[in-house]
Image (cartoon, rainbow, N blue to C red; front, side, top):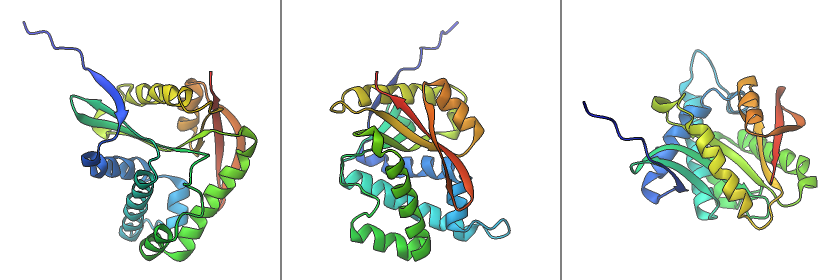
Length: 212
């Protein structure tokens, strides 16, 4: 009888060749996000325009994270990317009013109004977190749908604890959630609801996990 070897997982910075895979994972994970559907204009009878805009948004966001050298953290198993987390440092240059070429490219693909709404969302979150000083923010977290339910999200999230601890005295890690299951997941990992926020009539919670 052959005994299967235990799976070896590693949390490490994303490699350039895995950017497209990361984009696909994020797209799938955030396809049904209420805020994005609201801002990007999801229509049940014609979802293709929304999906095109969402793909453009994910592509431009990943490009901005990569160019600004913000943490793109991958969970790997035997060199296969199974989960991805995108984090930005509040002290970085990755501000809500991103550099002009990011805004121009996103406006052309997602639309002027939608781009400004997304920028306003980020600005509101930053203002709400201003009392936290220097912190990290989890912008995206996604697990390969083929491997969901295996605890990979928790494994990756705990890897981010090390990132917080090594990030020049960061006060903690923040995340914005809109669903009860997301709130329960992050609560079970030590996050606490910090402030309720609303974007375009979509309610959500800003959650924060203080550094240990």
